[in-house]
Length: 138
Length: 138
DNA sequence: GGAATAGTGCAACAGAAGTGCATTTAATGC
DNA sequence: GCATTAAATGCACTTCTGTTGCACTATTCC
Ligand SMILES: [Mn+2]
Ligand SMILES: [Mn+2]
Ligand SMILES: [Zn+2]
Ligand SMILES: [Zn+2]
Image (tube, rainbow over all chains, first blue to last red; front, side):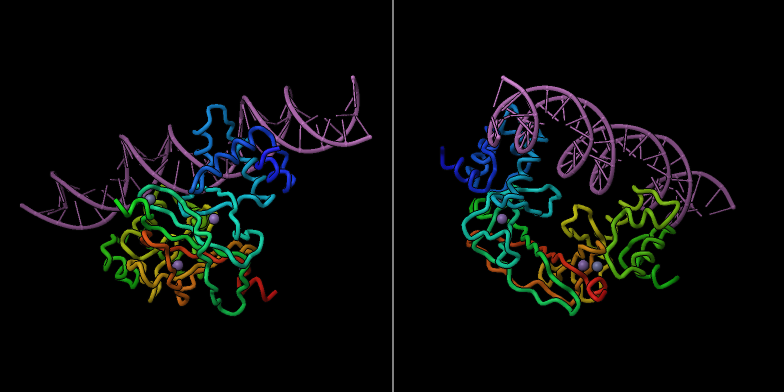
């Protein structure tokens, strides 16, 4: 049983061949991935399978979905300190307008926001658009 | 020349019948509107016209587009103090998960966010999802 | 092994966004 | 006013992402 298989098993995700491949692919990327990214990376990849795999990953708490403002959902494996389950402690995301990559800034937590009375916050999404570190140094 | 016509004219937007209607509709709403909201509000409304009208409104700086995480673009007329043109001073948006309404919290500015070195911020989007004041009081 | 369950592949659909082009409408100059 | 020109609109069509139903396959459990 490999490390990945253990990780999946821990969260009661049956470690099928496709799931392991997808997990590996995501783990190898420093950025969040779109469904089509995975689709293009593998010859034999069914969009539906990817769709449902990502959904499973998210529901079981090993990945989180990111809305970066492009209207294309991105996904990233949860990092240590990610704490996606808990409402608090959410990190922010960066979307580079040049290379179109979306990056989890896990260390950068979203500051507390004061709301007008009557408003109850359940979830918060903070996305910064700009130039990423790779793009800015060139 | 009515007040609305003046507003449009000031930003060099030709005040056509449809544009005035759309402007009125948006001004009468306290929440941001989706394209389909306008489409449903008028019998004779062409999606393309609405689409391009909203785009024009945005480009000319009398409205701003809002990505509230629903993957449906919302639009709202700019309020005094909205300052959409300037990167700084952006306000946050609230999306109610119960009534599905999206609200501009023009008074609530997005706090300054520190980024890792190399990252350059150009735009920032902060959306809070939860229960709005109307929904929470019931 | 066989029943039950979970995962996958294929097909099809929904909804929003976007584009090209012909037609209509409005502004401008004479 | 009327012709000329440019802008706005309406219609048809395409693309893309997301989503679901259903049949088929693989895996687990007894
Ligand atoms: Mn993230
Ligand atoms: Mn707003
Ligand atoms: Zn970049
Ligand atoms: Zn509400």
